[in-house]
Image 1 (cartoon, rainbow, N blue to C red):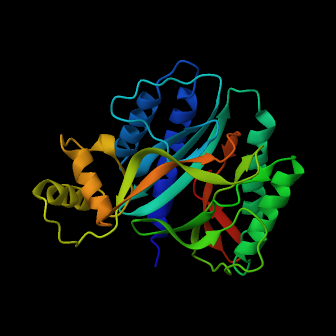
Image 2: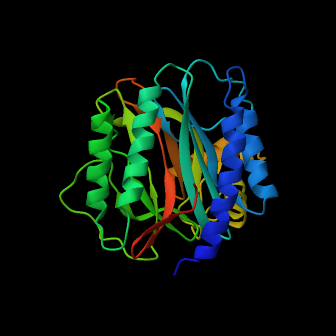
Length: 290
């Protein structure tokens, strides 16, 4: 059973660090400084990052985070910031978009969609209904939802669990129950509505903590990740290991770890994102991240 008080505490921290992040998205500001500042503030507040701060720009939809020596700065672009916080494994996950590219309506489309879906949440409602509301709202702005990305449930040390929350109308869904904790996460685009994997990969997660690993360096990496992050996603820049790339390649090849390539709109069009974590109640929901 979910520990709702710890979900709420994670949400409290999330709201605080979101304001920090929002204030730091400015032309000329450092992406790496934003990520590291927010992640440290999460720790200072008594939580821990549930995943590396995602900073996805323009056609990027998800899984972009700065590398250790990243010197990129913000420009006239669309910026999606996705932040995860956990308290003893219980997670708050939410995202927002800041537009510096002149596409305010696209940002409003995803924001309106998450708010419309939140209004429909209560015990007994199907996730298919949430998908219908999301798609209709984004379509009303003249854009498309990103069809092959979804919202998701949140478990103990599990960032993505059932139920899936679609961003379009589907025939069948999962009926929500009181006490469920879900992240509703619409993406809107002026493209056709599908993402593909890029080549960049800075985020990983441990899939098999008990795997037998022959390489000593790779084995040490597994032990470090297991102790520090369990099965939650981690960033390469969080680990001080001069053989990190080689160890990760070996662990990926044996399915001990999974990589998260940056996801991009397949035709190169802009993507906006909005997300909130909610606790399902009998006659509505509690939004922990708003």
